[in-house]
Image (cartoon, rainbow, N blue to C red):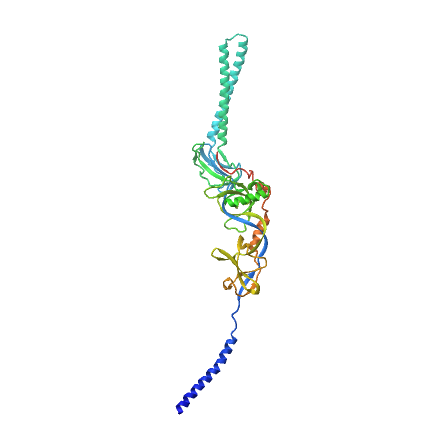
Length: 429
């Protein structure tokens, strides 16, 4: 009996303990706070007037490349130029021993004097023969012989004078001078060596390339070439070269495209193998920083100015072939919005469809933002640093400029015309 009462009291104590714990658990559950909202950074699209740019890889080339060859054979006595330096048109590069040519010139002068004396003598004989023939003193045969001797002496004088001019030229060609202004290469032949002249096995002495201005050659897609043609037509020009479309260049170690030039040539046909057209830009190079053969990145305006909605390119998300943005709508609820992308301006992307001005676009914290969920948005303005750099380029020169704008620096220090046809020429000296 006592055992039954003891077991009943134990059950009663256990039930009382459970009833005491249940209200405490309910109070603990009631105190638990909801999870915090995800914090995201949002920006409103920037409305800006922009110019769309195309970028191409290209290479620099010299308008004039001259191979300097020896025009006469002989011994190199002097080479008074500095390798790799800038030489002016007419500067002395090499001097070949002139003594054999000076002696030959003196010999030719003596031959001319001899031929002149012979011509004078035969001319006097011819005059006397003419008078005697008129007086019927000499036969016709004697007159004909005197006349032939006179004409032969005249021809010999002409040949002697031509040989004298050739000798004079050979003596002049012993001084090899720069035919153009530009940068000279190394000496292929040093002082003390014999060189061959003439047009057959002429010795190449050095090369010279013009460096101001320089050409930059680009291969652009035919679709881009058609757009440039449309720009030219808007300027009421028949072609791109006539419209003087601006272009900008930077080297591998440069930024913001500091070199300004213009398109001055478009090839007359499309390469059917690559679907590209070759375009040439002309750049002034008064500082001689640009060097023929360097690879470049060139930027060409592909449109006029137009208004665009710009957001950071990092805010664009990808779902297979679809591009979308995460928009913070009413009540701070995230929306997934498909959009159509436009051109890239630095690190800003233009949106052509799917985005309205003033909407809040998530630019940071996208991994924690789920479509349909509420977030805690913090707004920051869109950084325009990269766009300002592009606008600085566009403001530095309009899309088209007068031709004289690119020639002021070059004309002040050069003796040749920058618009000469680009071709490799071989000069024999």
